[in-house]
Image 1 (cartoon, rainbow, N blue to C red):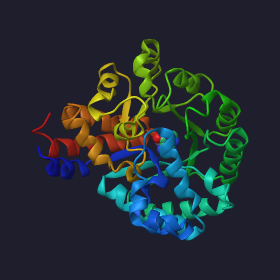
Image 2: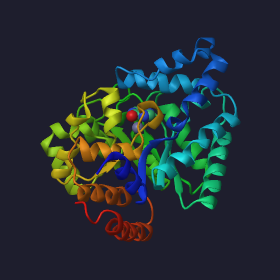
Image 3: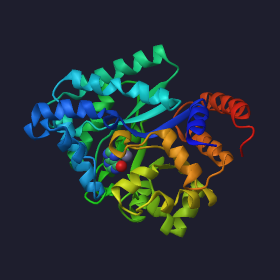
Image 4: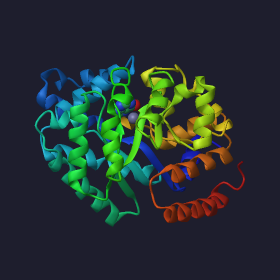
Length: 344
Ligand code: HPA
Ligand code: ZN
């Protein structure tokens, strides 16, 4: 099967994306418009393009935050949302759990409530127009300390929106140990919010253990350093804690792998650790969800049947209702026999 056919057929299959940063769905043109407005250096488009090359997770996060530092008004967030729906549609995504990281915006004086209002309005418009469900996970962030994270949690709780379903811990893993955020995650649990944690992306497996033991993470973002810890592999499998795998992201941030062929996702899959496939930051890593599935098929030698299982893992690992999961999985099975009956 060639890439065009593969992507065309796979776009017809309902999929989830459960590790996706909303700020990373901005277009490069919007990045240019927003950055050049604030920083004269970025009036040269080549200077903007140069930003999208990173030597580490820390460097990537600096770029991520630099762009956010130039956001000024509500309409900047509307610009951001303009790209979300086309991205989800192009990739056949029917359920997205989107991270939103308010820290750098609120530090610049933009009100959490105003930003969230834009998000909730856009989500509602999308829900009414398309059969696509978007839920928000507030990334309280490990980059700016515990008080900031607690403020983010409190703001999320105050919103009382059923579209805000949980909190996450993103940011610079080397600078912000998961266990420092125990009180924030405990309070989130008390308020019925889901908890996911970026861990084992840039730091060894103790970080994943900490995310599980101290933060009661329900899913692990990345988690690739677990591959070097036999005990943890067994634990993840037995406790059915899913990994939100983002292969291209890991190549860009260079923590454990240099090329996608080195990615441990196949080993996790073969050892029955639950893996899901995601892009993390599409515009920053120049990748879309269908490209990542193509990478699994061609570079990591997954069969089409494995790919179907990973798509189903995405639904089962999501925070949608059990009833909806069943409906989608039934639909996938029907469509799979229609489009992929000659491939296994
Ligand atoms: N790791 C941590 N923080 C992030 C990431 C990531 O991969 N993407 C956006 N924020
Ligand atoms: Zn991420």
